[in-house]
Image (cartoon, rainbow, N blue to C red; front, side):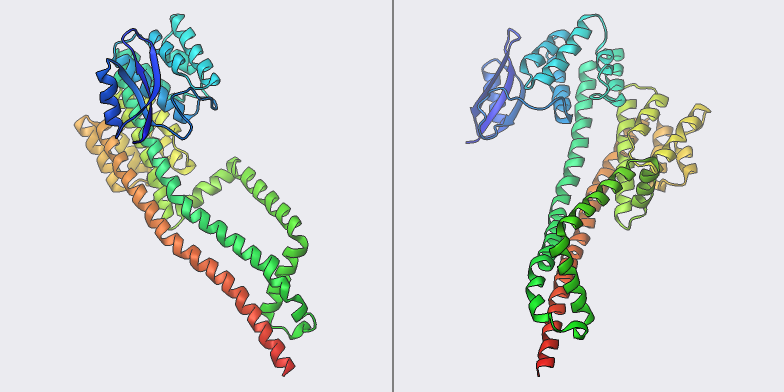
Length: 401
C-alpha cells in the first residue's frame, strides 16, 4: 500500500506530523479522525520521506496555497487567528517560511489585522490576495473567504499545470530536432570532406551548401554557440522593455489558433479574479482595478483599463467592454446578464470556467497541429542533408565514370 504523510491537530491544540500506510487518502482521514485528530493535510509520501520536516526554498506559490488552505481549516475548527498562525509556524517546513509566518504572528499580536500583516509582504501576497483577506475580516467570515481563496489559487495552479504539461512533449521534440541536425552537420557531414575535396565547383549547389554548413559548425561551433547565446540574451532582455513586450503581446494575439487561446486565457484570468473579489464583498471599482492588474497581455489590459473610468461615470461594464471592440458577443452578453440579474460575480466565474475549458481544448488542438509540423520539419531537414550528400556521391561517380 502507498505511504502518506499527514499533518493533524490534537485536542490540546498541538500539531502531529507523521506517515501512515493506507489504500487511499480517504482511508488516512478516517483513520486519523478515529483517533480523535483533526486532519489538516494529507499527501502521498515521496521517496525518502517518513513524516520528517523538510527544508526548502522560501515562500513560493505552492506554499502560499498550502498556507491558505491550512489556515482556513484551522479557523473553521474554531481556533483564534493567533493560535492558528502558531500552529502553522510549528508545521513550517523551511526556515524562511517560518520566519515569514512569525512576522505575520507578531503583527497580528500587535493588534493589526491579517490583511495589514500580509500587505507588508508584497513580494509574496499580491493585491488580489490582500483584498480578499480584507473583505473576509470586514464580513467576519475569514475562514470562508480563505477557503474560496484556496479554491481560486488551486484553479489557477491547475490551469498553469495543464498548459505546461501539454508543452513538454513539443519542447522535447523541438530540442531533439535541433540536436539531430547539429549532429548531422557537425559530425556526419565532415566525414565526406575527403571524398568531395577535389570536386570543387562540380558539386551540386545543395551539396556545397551542406558541406559549408558542416565545416562552419565543425570549425566554429563554439563561436556560433556564443553568438546564439548572446542573441537569445539580447532578445529576452529586449522583450522585457516596454517596446519589446508591446511587440510580443501584439504578435501573440495575432498568431493563428494560438492567438485565440492566449486571449481567452487572459480574459478567463480577469473574469475569475473579479468574480471571486465581488463574491467576497470587495467593491466593484476596487475589484476592476485589481483584476485588470492580473492580466499579463498589454493589449487586453489596456482594453480592460477603460472599464473603470466608464463605471465611475455611471456606465455599465458590459457597455464599456462592447465599446472596446475586442471582446466577443458571448462575453459581453454574459456580463450584461450578470449586471441585469445582480449576479455579476457568478456570471464572471461561469465565464472563467467556460474559457478555462476552451483554453485547455485550444492548447490541445494547437499541439495536435504542432507535433506533426515539428516531425515533418525535423524529417525534412535531415532528409535535405542526406539528399545533398547522395547527390554529391552521384556526382563523384559520374566524374569517375
